[in-house]
Image 1: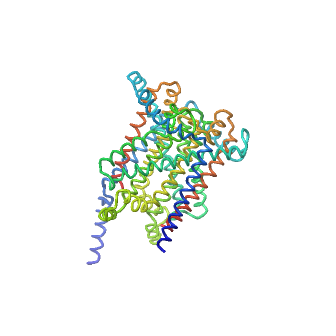
Image 2: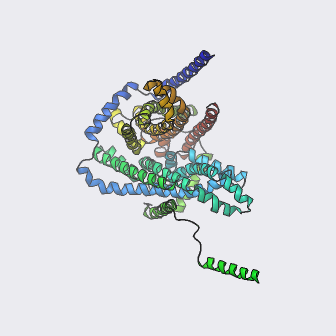
Image 3: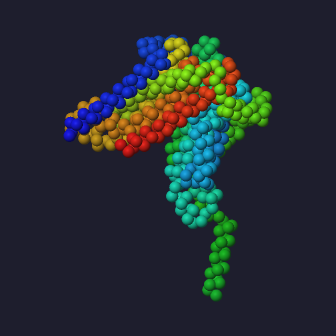
Length: 261
Length: 286
């Protein structure tokens, strides 16, 4: 009996690993990934980075320019996240099972959020590029759509988790819909929601770099400019400023999270 | 008489209350923090809208154009520069990039995660690994890919290695947190019975957090698919993202972007449905 159990367990895990290995081999073939080159290029990248990829005295001249485009990117991501959060709050209240008005609106708002969430921000950026061109608005709307979709899902889960009992209790006392939402649901889920918003801002700053590369605005464009013209010292200064700003924002939001949760 | 007096005093009490409202909401540290954060976000948002570089874009016109574009994209999607089979093959390439990245990331992250878990190693090693991982996470994925592209050339090698960096840092955080949830008594019991370090790892630590690890890894696979699309567009990694970039920047064909978007949406939703089913099954078995 026991031997049988272990034999079956071993067979199961062997089968699982076999499938994984098969898919890995398939993926290597289809993507034309060169394993030898992969291992080989790692030390080469490190030696190259140590030799070329660091800021020098001359690159500091460009620092004010880099800083201004970094601030632009930061502002775009913060604005997109907070406006996205406002819309997401509305859609989450409509979409959550505990607070929705009726099943019809509930499923509509869920479907809209799913659509927005599953189209990647890079795809949104390429779509919006047609009408908004190389302005900050392209990045803003791309991030806004992505944040809206993600935050709606997160907020729905928060509302379901936090306010199931209290909504029922308030409904039993005869409170109307508006007071249930504003007196119970929103106040009790604000800390959780704020934590999600802070997480989204962190994610958006990274995505904003990518969008900047694609659409030619903000810090991503600045990096691309110096990277493509082989000015690696200035490009590395851009990377350093991005790292510093992200770590700074992460520590601020970690502090806020510790206080509010 | 007595009753009347009481009524009067009751009214007086009400008056006193209305002139001097009772403080119901206590200003705790957390409510102050919430208010300051909300105010700061609101202020920064308003400031951002004033500081945007609008480049003389007529907002209303651009909005209308976007709606027209989105309509054309989704309702008049067509194939122009490639066929259905080509698109399917490119989607497979993107999925392959995501899969390779996730597998490499997961294997490396298991070992680093064990080192980063405070209950399995010393505090100093754990803090060191966590610091390095936070640093890796702070650099956007696209920059990792581009930095590696200088040494390895643009293509799948640079893309997979660059994306693996980010996956590793993400999974190390997730894995080490689930390792740390393991009860210390289990480890002590095994140690006192003479089990070696690797026996503890493979018989107690990994089996007890396997469910978490699988669901985090699958979540990362979903993220990596989106990242692989983006890397195809921004860093020449190939796959469906590259076709999308060409359709947007060279052919200026919004309808073809619509087709590609349908492909990406279909895969993303498929993965999400699969993940939900998979998690339910894991929860039943676990």
